[in-house]
Image (cartoon, rainbow, N blue to C red; front, side, top):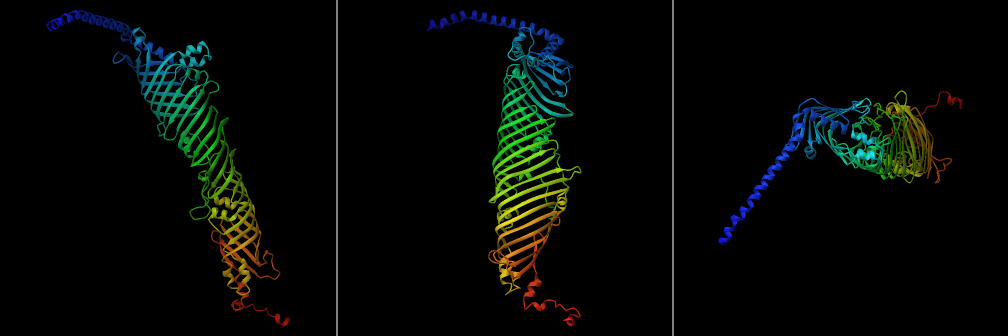
Length: 635
């Protein structure tokens, strides 16, 4: 035990010289490093001009920008080597880009520094004011990116250009003023970072800024920026997140003479119209386009935008198909082919002015016509089921054409109410600024009862309806259109019925109970084998001609006028007793009646004098017709 204890001092004594030697070597090595570092730092520590010259040269070589430092410059080693320059400015030779920052903070690479070289790893610009003029030719051949773009693909020059070192750039609390083709935009509170180590290595840009009351955030990632600049395809990802629009694109992009992006695009917007308005884009959208969700394969160039394999939902409608946008000169040309299992057209007509005013009459509010001269649109829509306001259609083929300020809405054909429907409406502004309107429609074999209920919530009519309409009008308000309305219509009803009037019963009982026939005619319903009428409209007055109807026990003839501007009706009708087939009897009884007043609630008035005359008991109530003087003497 003693031997062991006594051996310890001997062992420690043998180690101490080596420990002292190791510490000496560490001190010597530290001194050498310090001397080397001091020697390397000496030019930059004691020569501000050398520091600025080296930094300016590197930044000019990588960016092509000229640098001017107006404030003081400092170089620090701890906590890591870095430089700080106050009041620094950057400028492109053509003044397409100028930057004035309150401060530049740059981190320096350590290993090159030990060799006496000052290499900037990344820089941070504090509160820079950026001016961008897109109308000027940007950049110069001095920048690394420009040199990479000028190199021919797959050459030694391209490989060399891709090896050029860049670094990272951050912007803190920046502002940018962008000028373009007579317009300008201002971006505030810019926070951005660009990580791009060499021209050929992947680059990532993260950006956030305040603009027009919103704060968009975006990310751009490019796999091979050098190849992109030379017009070669490379993988590209773009993300945008703002209150008005969220979008993500993943695919391949290329620059050069024919820049293009091709890939998958997804986007969403609470209001596409609002998002486009923020960007000063006036789009003739058929509807508000709210709650938009979009997914498609995209092909985007400078003057065209194509979407295929498109899935779109907007205004609670869902579509599939394709969409295209191209430019002819300054005019955008839009074309789309869409399909839907069910579509409600109510949002698409939401912007149309109200037909009636608060007083229940036609609206006298002047039209505010949109400027639709500057775009052409060709939209085709097929829908398994479609709803237009209260009307239901099946297998509908719809189209919207806008060309030269002329808007055409067409229903090529649709199944509706057991029949078929087709129609077309054309709208255009004339030289005086008034609206010109032309329309035509055709209904074949339509269930009149179901149509009347859906269109006006009135169950008064039934049968198979065939109809043709042609309408023309010009005006600056709905009321003016109605006063100017011209047109023609033909109506035919087969195998139907009319509620609220029983002609057969009234004619059958008129001889026995003529006065009660006035009550009989207003109850029950009349079966109609066939009814028809021709309507000619001239300046808002609809003349009803050749009106006739026949059914079991009656034959009816009617004519009159409808004053469309006043929404009033004045018709006269005469019902004749007929056989079961509706053929008038030679000496059958007759009933005449008028239908007049507001067409929302017309007044039915039978020929009271004729009914009283048939009643023996009531005949004395009629005024006595005195014979003319001298008539008895002549007899």
